[in-house]
Image (cartoon, rainbow, N blue to C red; front, side, top):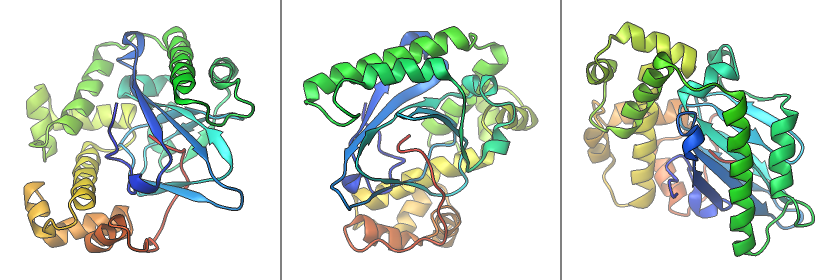
Length: 285
């Protein structure tokens, strides 16, 4: 799988392998992501993200963490050699891991899941310290890690009920249909009410539906500015349904701490500007 929409500077980031969720957990996980890095001694590699509006369950060599939905850009400073195996959770999985996902906003908390940790670490082990091996061996190792992760989820999380599946459909529609620009568009597409969507988002996502829509549009805007440095910012704003250039710029400043033009210059290889604010996060997503 290749989808770097959430990575702000993918050219300078470590390799992140994205693997599809096995059928047994396809209603619980959007995909699995596995970054692996080997940073020279004395160096730091900063991975910066505008994360998907979702929670992530992450296994690292020493801990299992649960990352809540974010309200602004996030980063992870990578040093030495290492890896992580993360699951980008679908809404249906979330209530079984955290009672109130909104309370986990902008936070990455350790969770005590020893069985999950042991299975994934065992699958990723065997290379003398969690680093990078030959690619063919890495493919096998990553596949085994995803299989172990999925097996744990299939045993410990129940099959989604009707409400949870509607929450999944809400997230799928918001993320997959660029014509969806208002909460009423989502309600019409699902044949439900905006109030119901608000309730579902509160229980299963931790962000309001309107924030989920804004995140998708901002990810798309950043991707377009990053991949086409000559594109007109006002045209991007119009194409994505922003009222005007200023509306898009306001979203950029609120979430990224940068203006669109500053981000475009940084993504083109100029010096990265310092954002107004950042928050720590797991390495990927």
